[in-house]
Image 1 (spheres, rainbow, N blue to C red):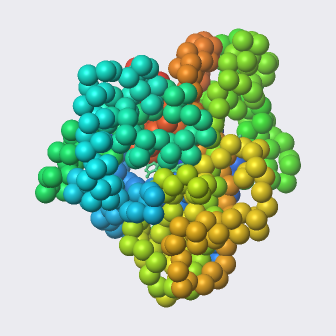
Image 2 (cartoon, rainbow, N blue to C red):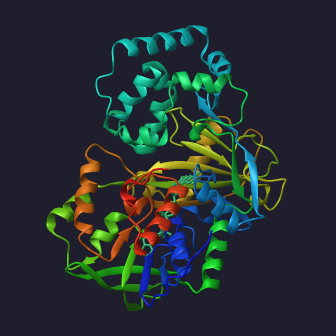
Length: 466
Ligand SMILES: Cc1cc2nc3c(=O)[nH]c(=O)nc-3n(C[C@H](O)[C@H](O)[C@H](O)COP(=O)(O)OP(=O)(O)OC[C@H]3O[C@@H](n4cnc5c(N)ncnc54)[C@H](O)[C@@H]3O)c2cc1C
């Protein structure tokens, strides 16, 4: 990437050192801006950081490096030229005590479902092509239209309701539209019978890149690069107050882990912290209608229970989706299948039992011991740890992991956007910053384009599609 310098003395502050914040800092510092990044955690990477428990490495979810954007692919290669592994995806769905390949393979799905159920699925699909579903703007309607009622119920309903904690009829179709894009039964069948590893649909792609020490390795290297160019990263530092005067941000208050408060002057602010948090931290208080709007926006949170077993091999998948509704776990990661270096001893296996929760609910408040017990019980119940002995467990909770696309969220976000756009030296970035359920490549691009807007660009970050 070629850079022309736009030397400036402007003090730019960036809230959050996730993919969006760090990428924004990188783009700005290369153009001569004085940049400070403020991050509440002790490490960079945000949701993409690598976690460590003893000598084991874990990922929040499992972060595939996979993008249709040539710019993002080039950036990944530039920052981490030698430490990416090329991983062949293996993932399956566990439903009614059977495994189904995912992406769906037609023969495998039919043999799992049995001939009679398969015929009923096809019939159900034909029916929905004739009698259209009632509410195509809900996730349920969107899916039913493309897959038929029966397949939707088998392969999408229970998992989606675990993820969001609300009925699929109350989830906006925007989520499916954005994440599953043009996928339908017909295209899944086309994909299923194709020999090609190149999928037309990103969600079905068979190979991805993964840093050998987990996704955080990329962001640690990006931070080092930023530092070498002059970016200041304040870690263990939380933004408390964002002060503004009419249409300009003037300064922010930050607090360190020890509780000391400091005020930083600000010429320009980028925020990738949750949109709702930004609104609540503004001083003077934002108009009551905007405050109310931000209270209507919800995030889903995420718990991973790390379980370390004294067994070399437990299953071959990178991850397994658990659709069975008699257990709460939604997905199981097997980290050594992402990169062998996630596990210090090849004779051991570390799994991540993933639960989607709402902050403050029963699981969120459960003690770590009870959570580990629950995870082990569920793993045993679904038969995944036969003969394996648990060595240790650890629980990790992450708030604000998923912006919830409930009906009306779009209008609510538009109200907040309207208010924030009156502030001339502020841009919001990234997943929680824009309240947009998107992957890291999108967050990175919002960082780049936000930086370019400061240099005269005219990118609409709220509607950036890749
Ligand atoms: C389970 C799961 C699986 C995923 N899988 C993938 C995948 O396979 N591939 C992929 O590309 N993406 C994946 N993603 C999405 C990816 O993690 C996000 O798109 C990306 O991390 C968003 O980057 P961001 O910089 O916008 O936000 P974040 O990563 O959330 O970073 C925001 C930062 O702001 C900081 N912050 C918040 N409040 C404050 C405060 N008051 N003061 C200071 N700092 C603050 C946070 O600590 C955080 O570091 C997944 C996400 C989840 C939850």
